[in-house]
Length: 238
Image 1 (cartoon, rainbow, N blue to C red):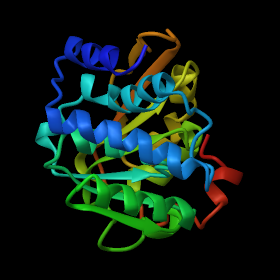
Image 2: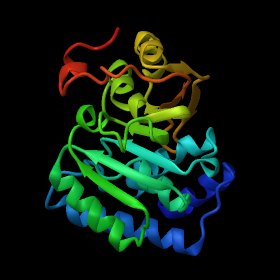
Image 3: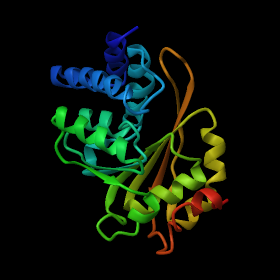
């Protein structure tokens, strides 16, 4: 298994890759592996694994959400750029902001975006708890996304303050996704969200379970949220 199944998997979901996009994913993989020797970006290094468990997995929200209608996206704790940069490759019109607390990862992402010639991608080094109180970011984005960052009660507090009213927060979760959704009921209501129906899928080759959890922003987030850095993780809203 390598890139050809990746293409057919996406075609089955109605996503067609152009030649340029094929080349971008190929370069993404090569640069990821190269930089992974310098800093810890991923434990997956086999091409087949990266294409399925990083690239394809990052694109699964597009099976259930129409990103064509969005203009702005923020990715909280993107790590090596997942899921926002694969989504940016597919939807180049998106204006994307990525927040990560580790400067080394930001440096990698800046090089990656430049080499992939991705426009309108910006990077913020810092904590989501701090950046969410900045006027230029608070309730500014059509969509917030997050993958492999924290449990849903914590993640909701980190992400929902960035989303504008009528916008969407999308979390990519594994097999415990529905349990995490139930645990985040208090956080959802308190922070101005409303759950939409969860979507379940399995990765094509590995066949492991994934959930796409979507939350609509129906009201303004109270100004005191998110709480100061570290507090959401220590004292989750449950």
